[in-house]
Amino acid sequence: MAIQPKKHIMPVQEPSVRARNFKEVATGYTEELAVAEAQRCLNCKNRPCVEGCPVNIFIPEFISKIKEKDFEGAYRTISLSSSLPAVCGRVCPQETQCESKCTLGIKFEPVGIGRLERFVADYHNVNFQGEVEVPVSNGHKVAVIGSGPSGLTCAGDLAKKGYKVTIFEALHLAGGVLVYGIPEFRLPKEIVKKEVETLKKYGVDVETNVVVGKTLTIDELFEEGYEAVFVGSGAGLPRFMGIPGESLKGVYSANEFLTRANLMKAYKEDSETPIMRAKNVAVVGGGNVAMDAARTALRLGAENVYIVYRRSMEELPARKEEVEHAEEEGIKFEILRNPVEIIGYNNPNDKKDFKNGFVTGIKVRKCELGEPDEKGRRRPVEIEGSEYVIDVDCVIMSIGTSPNPLIKNTTAGLEVNSHGGIIVEESTGKTSKTGVYAGGDAVTGAATVILAMGAGKTAAKAIDEYLTEKNKK
Image (tube, rainbow, N blue to C red; front, side):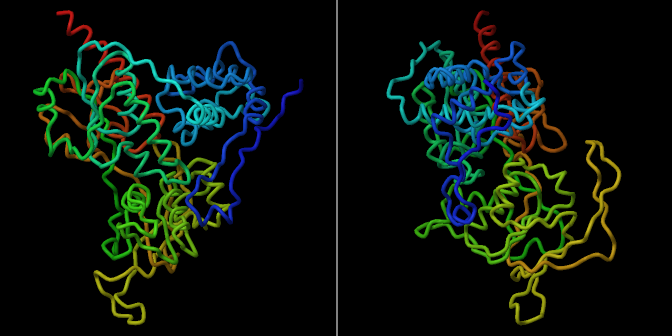
């Protein structure tokens, strides 16, 4: 049978429709589409796709199960490596990881691994009626700080080994960046809730509204009988550019803007959380978070939304799929532009400038690409005298985040780097403080969900080995 050269198209809402609602953009494969896509897999003996996956999912094996229409078997195969398949199938950058290694991709489009993972997870969530097999307790307690992807993964892997795990979450809902950062139209929150509920079935306890560093400390966790601690507190401290006008009303960090929309449901009419429903919005940055903020602003009623990015379209760090969806929905790209000032007046009809007034525009300077930087990306070089103003009433800064300093400031003996990231041994996640491990954005700064999961998995293995050895003595 001849192999279809292209992936089977993922069904999606029409751009003009989805741009004004918060329902999931992609509607998912049917059983027929999933089986047809699975049949494109060559089932390579050397399995290069697995090497490209940070959590080493058994990819050819789960795809083979789909070919046989054993969808539940495919889910069980994925679950041997991943605690969050419904999440990964939606938000992982498969195109630069597993799918980039796909042998079929040498000649044709690679197999749609992420689409198949999503299908399998969704099939399980709809159809599985059984109970999970709870492992026998080994009598040991581990604390996990943060319920984002690294924390959930670490907790899940340890719980399956018999540890009594408690997750401590600062917010009122578990899920970390999965609930406050990623919009409903990309990752429905019911899916995150379902994944958390599955972990609870394995015996994981989740305590919300606990701010480690204020409510209690890491040292107090040890005093309460926890034998090891994993820190997966993420990177929620927003960065700003330090340009004039960032204190004006109508300037948000992407973190605040998305948290109001995603976690607090500010887009709903009955929400008690205010959010600006601007007519013209500029989002500064070019990553996935910038795309999320821009597309959220559009769904909140904006007429014009601009992505302001200082490099070219080729250098945009956001996923190709997210950029394509944004373009289809009408997001405008102001490329090779760098903001130099945010402009505002207390009253747009009164040209007297007020320091704490409202945003009325963003002044940008044109750029051109110069020599490559240390990461190999060509540096943007500003062109003097090329400034102009884009008329907007809201500016969202999406230029990165840093780890919150609270934990390192309240934990003696925990070493961090110049960016505030916790320093760990890469192969284990072990920190400078005995019994404390860390992973995800708290270590690396803002990165991908799957890399955070990989770090949680690495730390869980190391914690198990550490406690096994310790309790032999």
